[in-house]
Length: 105
Image: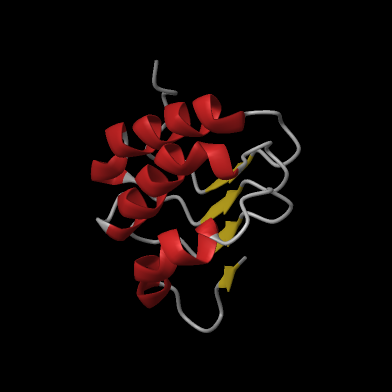
């Protein structure tokens, strides 16, 4: 089941919540549903319990960001998740959409 997000949401801070892969998957689906009017500028997902075994939701998040799901995203915080070398590899295409002022971890 996808999380429903209001399109006018500018900041979403879920850091420290044990979402894991299933929760990340629901979030990705919710972001896609709200994409038409999405004004999300800050997405904080530090320490949500995602691991290397959650490669599929991680890929969906990366590709969702790349395809314009969050067109005005400025901050993406994915610190303290144990995903080894997957995160930089999966999100490489997203780096082009982030400016110098934007944080990407």
